[in-house]
Amino acid sequence: MAHINWIKEYSVGVELIDEQHRYFLTLLNELFDAIISLNTESKIGDIITRLAEYAVMHFATEEKYFDEFNYEFAEDHKRRHRDLLARVEGFQKAFDEGEVNIASEMIEFLEGWMIDHIMEVDKKYVRCFEEHGLQ
Ligand SMILES: [Fe+2]
Ligand SMILES: [Fe+2]
Image 1: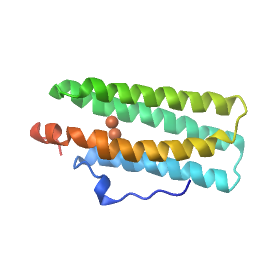
Image 2: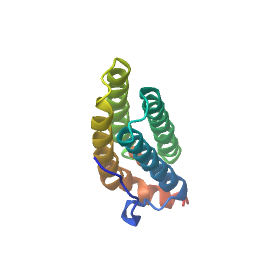
Image 3: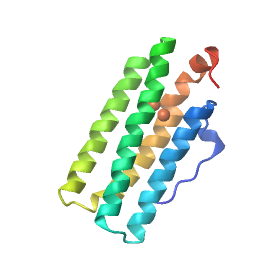
Image 4: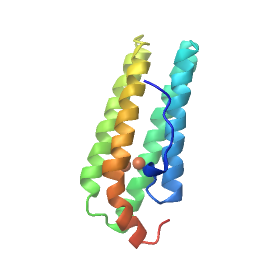
């Protein structure tokens, strides 16, 4: 678990999407800072809630374009989003039930998931988005 910095290799070439990915990483870093500075449980819980909400919003943005552009790998991609949201919900539930140490496990998992997902799954829609004039 560590701070994670945006590097240009993460870019999918669409400004709005890059911005959302960057903000998601910022939220993860915020959660990291809250944990190492031993912030209150409610502050950590708040960040977890914001992360979960942001993930929902971000996936909805991508999926809106999939539908609009008839993206060929939409179904598989949406399934991956759903699986992640279920996982996040699980973390959230565990945290709410008092497993506060789950927060660092959550960061570690989300950092890995997010980077892999951007590099291997999100990057596949770049050509389709470009062909539809999104930048
Ligand atoms: Fe995605
Ligand atoms: Fe994404």
